[in-house]
Length: 263
Image (cartoon, rainbow, N blue to C red; front, top):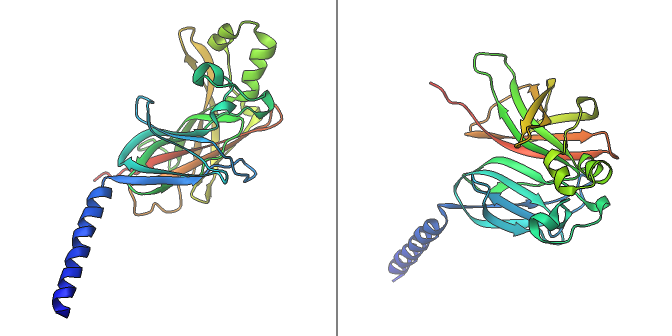
């Protein structure tokens, strides 16, 4: 009888295990805490995982302690993960149909780019008044021993300055506004995990956007490789920036960098 009970129990565990595995093998969970740069939790922040066309794949909100959980995320690669309180965005009324907070409380969003959802992830967004758009890490094959990064910082102070003091027509301001920062006013830091990586060069690049080819300034950064590439398919790089203008603006982004495995 004992033997039969053990067999039955083992069979039940096996069946349940198969069912649980079948329900979860194709999905992961993304969780973390949303905070400001002083470590204070941010509640009611939207956390949105984006498909490649920037349509939302999943959305959730942080609780009163800033924590969030995004369950049932289908395994795969996503263009990005966005986080901020939607009413803090300077054009919240136009874009989301909600009333915008006062200017002193406005912010720009956090992004994690090229999100690789192959296992449960912890992403802890921090955001302030500087958006670090399009952060990417890459290498020049056969070139220097360093890695390269691209990023285009955008300043909330610059947006508000243009809309308030330069243009009387808000629609016109949106078409021609330059939200770029200057090299002399910005400082960058790059990490893998908690390992700081030495930056050797920061070079501005003027890009052109929109029908009017509005100039905007992006930056290329040359920096050290991590000391050790771990036994994984990718590394997560983190960039921080401080913009020493408009009362100091901060921003942070992540980038999931796929390791090259040439034969």
